[in-house]
Length: 355
Image (cartoon, rainbow, N blue to C red; front, side):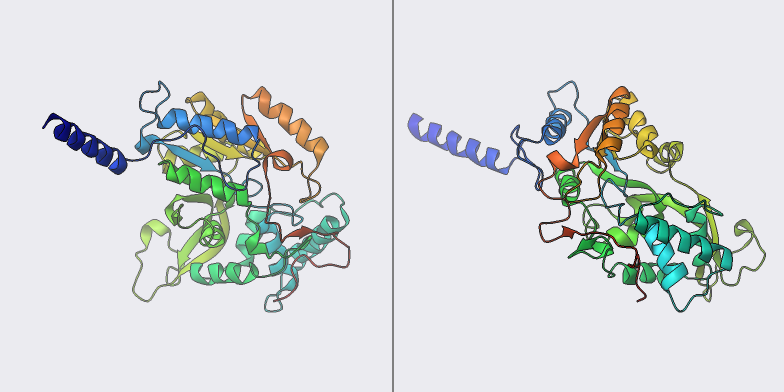
């Protein structure tokens, strides 16, 4: 009888253990990262700590926030420039349905030429964000997103086997999935415009980051029947469409990222990931509140257009601020996938051939 009771208790214990939520293991790894990546080991160790209820560093799931920059952190920014700037040049120079104002068209031509020849960028008449907003004035938000979607199918200049929409860093996408599986709420906090982010990321990250967690810069919006009335004085009607008015109203960079986190998330992040000085404020906000910040070094000259000198300087800046760094060369087993090859950029190319 005692043996039967002991056996029954053992079976019940095994069933309870099997049904319980798996614990975080110390030997966790993240797909597409190198096996001996010190950055990956650091991230995994930190995640283990904040997920362990017996740890002094434990963070409950409802407060477990991770924020990511987009360009250069989750997505390539050297095609040979940011995705939204490539979109801008396509619109201004290669879209036969649009005649750009002479001033911005001249700037876009000079910018494209400089980027393709490795020269310094010309001075812009206005910020690229403002120029993009102007170039899509009168579009509905849906038309704007559809335009972005079509552009994403264009081949990315500087690479073989990749379109502009396929420029995500595979190790970083895997990292997002890993964090979500460990009960992190993940947000994108980027200088790119919010609806652009939502279109760009809906396929690769949409299952882990819903649209309302993609926070970016903003364009002013109006209703078709609004006329000269202010937003506060006009109510949307059944016949109205929501249109891009043609102005950038908020740029989500530097302290703007912290303001966005405070206003739209309301909790300081446990983890912050970036790749430039525009992400330093976001990283500092995480670190000063007990979290950690990791910054990517664009130091891979074989698989991407890295610059080892700039990367070394940036690495020093990051460490002085208490951030850890991720070497794309050493920590990533692949960047865009093994079927993608970096090619030489030549002056005769266009950044965005007409669709």
